[in-house]
Image (cartoon, rainbow, N blue to C red):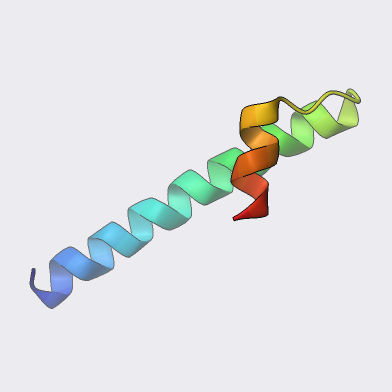
Length: 43
């Protein structure tokens, strides 16, 4: 894997983490947080 591939992979991971955080925030506002997102947030 070259440097550009590593940067792209890191950027995609950040995008996924951001999306999960936004989704988790939406559920937390409504008082419900799915178990899957609870587990993802612990990592």
